[in-house]
Length: 377
Ligand code: SF4
Figure (cartoon, rainbow, N blue to C red):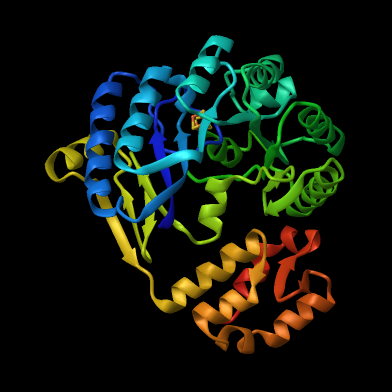
């Protein structure tokens, strides 16, 4: 059975946050037609791919999936379970925004089969939350995590953003201290990225907001790695940290180059070396599903060289590059070509090599994008 992850995109949101460039819709008129389309899309791909596949994770992302009523998420989940091989060990995550769930709603999400909650907190500082235009305050965020634990969720993750304009190291440390004091097993800590087309980008162009510089960003990042490691969260990817046994199975599927099937607007899939992606706009997505059962707007079949580059990049950004596996899949060429550069990185303590694995050090993670561009393929 081939291990496969499933992602479902729920594009609906309460409002648009200033930094967000995800496809999201601030209207609920189309919720039922979207559900019908999702089911048809699941039909289309399950007919092609469900045999011989074991589903290791189902991830409801968005958008704001927790804005949906539990029966809505349940209907999608039941449909997936009907069409694919999902068992009691499958990780089933719901991205959850503070301010969208009560204790009762969380209880219902638990009952319908969600077993992992990923809470988009971003900050515990009231000024930072206002700046990010989040709909919740710090207390609501804390309460959402406590309520999730109270109804029996054991696997809880939180998302935080650092390097916000004007954020001092002390403020960031306070955020981290608050996070590790909560009953959580996983933290995703991202640096604020300025994406084109966002409200924040316009604010920066208009001179209303000043972003912090890259050196400060790297400084906060290395501080984050040290802090979280000392508090029992092991780094297993550039931005992700987990207590022992709680790495996100869904994330790992992406980073370990496993197949994933994704449903919904703007969803990207990767199966048997082929990648495809859907229409982003809801009306185009619905119309395409109606007429042909899928909503693919683009696709690519990766060449061996592209596969090799992605494989190396994903492995190094996460748990490390297994040299035995690399040789098995791609031969020795890449290692021969990059031998000198790898030695240099090891000497300068950007990489460590142990038991046929090479892995970034915290210093290497901080500049990994730059390092990755310098490998020859
Ligand atoms: S809630 Fe999340 S997906 Fe929706 S606009 Fe804000 S950041 Fe984007």
